Image 1 (tube, one colour):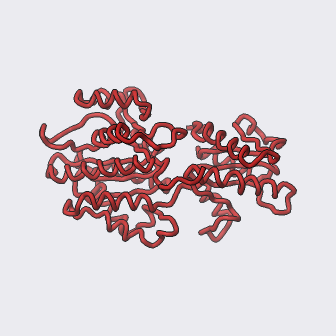
Image 2: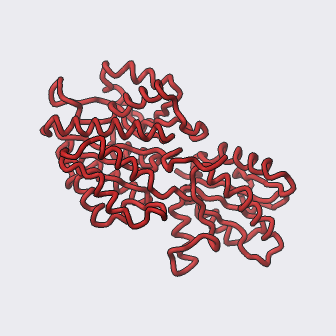
Length: 388
């Protein structure tokens, strides 16, 4: 399996925001048009979306809604009907909806047929927060657990909180400068202010692939809506291009690195021959300390900084190295997704034998080893954390 063509493939993009009831309907409609085109482009690239679901408030019966979730869901349903989905099935459904009991009860009757159709489609996963709760913060925290990239329009305190959640995980935040206000008229400027901050410090909000390095601010400038004066199709196209230039999430490798160890060559062969191509095939980059380039002056700092923000960790304990045990324990305690591996015959330490481990056999063919590891990854990558 070769690497996917698009960086968006297999990644979920959360689209969040709102408009004020006082906002000019033409600006709100501009936002809906932009969301429509963005969702269509994401799904056509094999990406998924994270949304909410509930009421659909409008300033007047004829005006566009001040929320964008139903527009996104409508476009998604149409895209699946007309073009199908190339989203990788092993990642679960492409649509991930986080809602509450109260929000579900507020779904408009006009949207019930769409909601029921998506529920039956097998393309939508619904997660609900604590029964009876309607905490916006709880909804956002759950959404941020599943989103890989955040795109914001308008909004207030909620959008600002979501951006903080994503940035604290070093996940990209792309904010549009459309002056929409917010549904609650709260916050300190919402997406419009975040867009300004991202232009001042783009490195805090996005990270590009190396071939696009240095163009971050130019790309952010290209998605300016100019208060709705910019052509919406051009903005959507530029936004899609920006998403496509983002750096891929990375998998951190913790493994035997001492070239003088008797097991070094067989471990090195497993990672170069089996792990690297499988990880790449899932649309992810790899970070192998001692092999990959580092931005840190000290190795120990680099190890734990990169370990902390990895999208997943592959921990191979062949050779029974103490540093691998430490890094495995850190990953499990930090609730990072962990794939444990070891050469057949390795004695697992402590209570690790209670955690699924892929035991690899160097004597098998390359295709057999890759297939075995790929299947183990698919079955175990989304296991719940030990402590949540």
